[in-house]
Image (cartoon, rainbow, N blue to C red; front, side, top):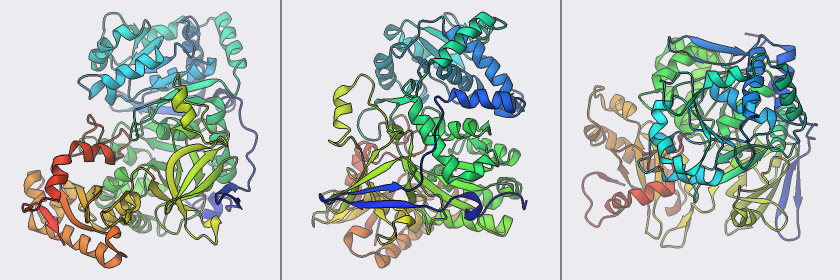
Length: 620
């Protein structure tokens, strides 16, 4: 236990930053640490570890028998060469990429690695576009833009309706994962591996294709989540990925001595799981255990099982998932012991971690280890591969997103009463695929990407203490009084104030007299607080006097602690229906889309502000 690096001094280098004021009122904020030379392409990492540690585990998943199926670095590279040999015969290019419809899996990973080894872009799209949709509008838009030459799905039977719905938009080969039942007009994944088996001449072709890659080679097309506007295909180059992960060798030096082991559910169709996490594992020769669970009640037991079985060294997740995990860690001693046994970092991103969840994770770590585990965050987007900042120090509280990473410059621009942040660096995307107008509008006249987020300094006199995420500029609104409401910070404060009742919150009040909350309740925790059994109906749970009183107390606490009408809600409504992924209210990563919820549930907003509200509306 004593050999595990756990303190900030052991894990990180001290932040060093440069803040430059400009005549126009903007400021440039960058790291004083140099970005080292980075790999030409991500395939260099796989080649390295297959040569140096061929027997080390690269990736593992649960098999049909429930046991771990593991693939070593040596085996992975051999299989990548066989798959790449087949791919070279399919007339693939950026104009005919590989589209992946499936969840995370070993075959998904090997196919993606093979594509990137020979310069064929791969595009993993959200499985929800295929499995949750009835009209397949988003999927058809994805396919029409990319026109793939190969489509991979596993298991094929789950995706057949979606594949039929896009049949007129592509002429590619459909490949079925090995766990699939036989299906017509598909090619089994095992068959594509057989093509290159033992064919050294074709391996020479793979090696030649690999040698021709440059940092500008397109590695992926990643679709944005659509939380703001329509989904767009982000061109992700090798330079973006390789430069972005290389900065960790500087600011997280412990990864050079202790190879990461992660247990991860985050979908590879999004940049957090598919680039940020996956690339760190391969760059540093670590191991990735695919968590087949998710932060939803039906799948959370799988996550608990996996974390009880495999102890991570770094744990990556989103605030929603941590909110559910703390209850399991509190009540399950075996899970708590294994989870913390060699954990070096608890990492969250995508939104601020509610302070109540932060405090509970810290308390549980101290209970198990006698000391806390470092908790930290980062900030960025699909267009920035994704990290732009990193909190490589122990933050003073939740919500600190750190300082600029080596090689990346932030431009901080005063806008109204906010500080808009823009980005430039080698991790920045060159544009959206086949959407030149969207690309042109995404950059300012100095080439900085206008991400649409706002930040503020933890301490303006000490920039090395980092930045706080201050919400999206477009999400904030004004009350009728003309006072701005900062949705991001208010949402996080509300989740903490209403803990453990609130799983998530949508903030209302645009052009109204006061702020309201639409509250998605944490039903298991609500049942526990109200003393109800596990079978108690949701409607009865949210109407229980104890739950409503806890919500009212939280609202009153926010009013006492706030500084005016823009800092606390005057009313709240508990929602019986969970956020809908199909309707775009909840992304695959568990992020709430505020705009989608407000649009879809406009009737509930009207109910919240009714002149004659019913008993479900909670007032202070």
